[in-house]
Length: 503
Image 1 (cartoon, rainbow, N blue to C red):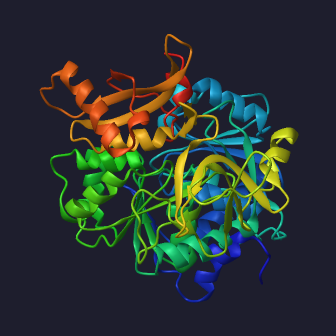
Image 2 (image 1 turned 45 degrees about the vertical axis):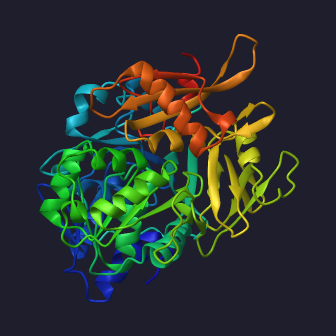
């Protein structure tokens, strides 16, 4: 019987159709079929009831990417408990803030995180459930494998995600049951084109909206499988996973794609003999990275834009329509427009704020009424991203709305300058911010990470400035270039440009 709970469609449907023996998840130690997952999530739901954790209470998940993640995530939802996956790389202070802000009734934490985060998640009356290489063990064994799934409305809050906090304290984003299926039937089916025989590997972790769709929602929508990498997705680790598991689908972020291209062992399929599709989100993919990846690996990257508030990608390139340097066009099921500060549509080619409409939009922020009203206005979600749209309908990222620069009376996109810099063979990564000159006028300043090599720094500054003038425009070149070893980033890999403005 369909309870209305998303668990019915993503797990129990496959068992009822006779596909329970299909592989759902694999990590370095264990594997899990859809039947195993159904049983384990029922046990988890039953164990939560025995622990006194009831419907609509929040449960923080501080889990690395192992099969315990889907057990805890879907097991909580089966019980009507609200799972709150959070980033395992956050500082202890930020983790403590989220545990307190969400009013978590319980915490599930990977054993490997206890040394750094164990103390901050412990609070009076909040049980801590530890996940280790052997699974939940005693906790799961106490749960009834026949636990009944909680009935839910499609509009009922199912889970929370916390925003990355790149411009302030993280915000609790509340998502409903039906949003998961909506993203699967739009992006998953119509852009990614996932099928039951696909194997997905997402370097973006499952605690992140992008990784959650990649690793859980999309494969489970069709009975496909996912391979998990619990550790940090370094280029070496990613290539090792590609060689070992031969995934057909790969989800990464622009910084990782650039790092993989710089690895001497990169080659056709990035190590996978079955790789057929790659996707990217988190930040805009520089055109040069996309074209070089296609040349070296032999597979295109479908770049797109999504957000925690919209749950996954809502504008994307598609397999038969790739325009590197753009985010593509709206995913079927979504509408997008670009507006000025008065909410009026802007002409083609003019920058404005990107707003989007689609049924995966969050219900709102937890205890953030003013920010909820600013972001969620009727059916439209205001992204805070500055975009342009050309006459052919392709959307192009310009930067966060508070990061755009006005130089000599003309708007300049930091991303456009960064993209020009990255296209130079000496540059691995770049970030551009506004900086005042001696007259108090704002001009672009670049922070650059160089590829390995013997560079004449003084000469390279002049060369890079000329390169940007040629690629982006004379007035857009960075007046200052600072060579650095690293760039400040959020734990999900987004560059924190506001920190560079303080330098």
